[in-house]
Length: 132
Image (cartoon, rainbow, N blue to C red; front, top):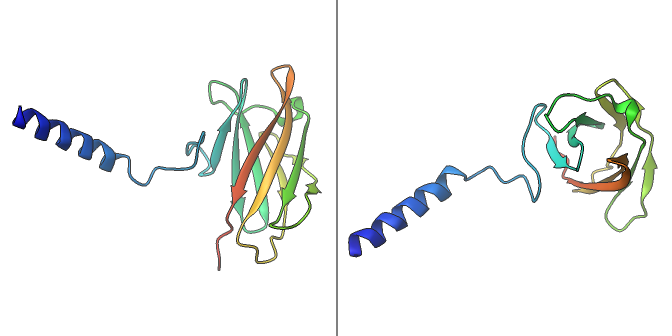
């Protein structure tokens, strides 16, 4: 019985270590462009930020790039203790592009409203810009 206990303990410990460093937040996984994925009913959205550039890629349920022009969207950004502000998204084939200056904020929230699967959804990302 004692050996069984130690065997189970070792297995659980090894499993925990194998997944260390892969936490991208609830409901998200890392994917194609190195961004953060949010899954919806009929699409997957990937947020990629680099400097002031913000790209949002869209994939179908089989994780193939989808045409962004087929989905009505809007994007808002909220800095801590500030009101939400709309950002203009420009379609770029398989992604939308916008730019935002976080003005040295340590984080900001992006909320994408999208019509997909016959209804409206909202997806939220909290972004912590990299310091130079």
